Length: 212
Image (cartoon, rainbow, N blue to C red):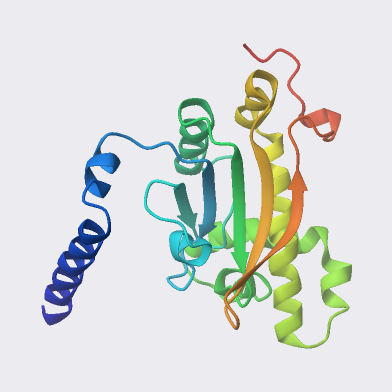
């Protein structure tokens, strides 16, 4: 229970610090949110969206899952995406992975992990698409890190395949799609891919009759 009590103490100290800096901070937050960004990140506790981007509450709408996946059957992620694009009108959707990701590393092996196997299989699909490139890397750390990058790129492409994003492009000329990777060793973000509204995608994934 000491750990829980510590959390509440830290919360009170944080709230007091915010209030001292800006007496209207919480009043402004309570009136609503207007973020420019939707962040799809990894659940890893070392990659908190606000901290690594230097933003404050209210600036980033966040969804996190193991290995920052955009899976077309994930209703949780898709619901967040729809709300971000259609209601919040975000200008940017960011998929952010991180080097040394445990989920990506697991996808390179054959260990049985129970229910988690079903999720990691989606990362294995990315590995299968890029097997020759990844297998050409002999050392484990750079091999995992290259698959981390390729996974981020594929998840951004998966975003572009959704009707939510294509509708946003058609109706609002937004959002921009970004793929980033975070380096735990130095705390820096690196850009891997940027898809602008209306950029060409494989025609098989395009929807012709999206409602205005």
